[in-house]
Length: 321
Ligand SMILES: [Zn+2]
Image 1 (cartoon, protein in one colour):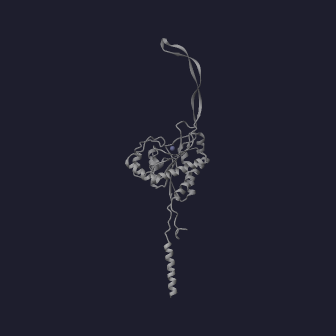
Image 2: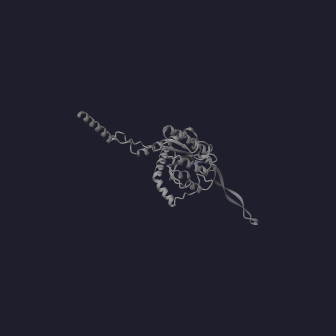
Image 3: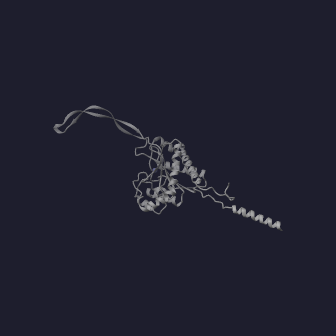
């Protein structure tokens, strides 16, 4: 009997001992559950163009390839596209409505990361253009004066030459934004007026109002740092491939999409369509695959960084020694 009791007590001890060590399994919340992929422009809004392509087509091709790459590498991550065909998101009739829809789609899907894909352009014509320059002077007879004062005079006239100027601007730039999940999205869009282009908007976001400041403070810590981190990785990966990069920039104006998405948001200008070679690169499978690989490598680093900051999951047997 005593033996039985002793055995029972011992068993209790084991059970209690085990229980005291027991801590519930901490299932690590995935750091990135949903990624919003936003192909710039679309439909009636072609964006910029080069010699052989329009921005809306190039951004869509790259975005769809990026989505496939993420699906393959991280099948657990949900991909939400703002568009998968040549339309403005949500079949919007205006660019502004399209911008609104982009943010709306992102916020409704509760994205953890918002990636916009764009292509850059200079104000000068794609490929190149002719300019005139003075290459010398020649003596020339000209009439000067008026009426009866009119007389002939030898003047030094410039000799012009037309010459071809190649549009040499190349490189990738990544833009970040302070995010916002407040209810002012509609207002923010309404303030901008019709027909604003995402690239050359002159609308200034009112960051001076008290509520805007509070919002900025609230979301800055949460999303801004993450956006900077992702953007830096993207630029870094471009650079590793040998691409010209212009670094991480903050645009004070125009990027409504990034302003209105309540999540870390990054806009990637993948290169200049106005440069012949870079346009060919961005239209080629090789170029598009490289850009996608760069963004994927950046995403892997970003994900690792986020996960590295979290405590490691606790096992059922207590913390490992
Ligand atoms: Zn664009």
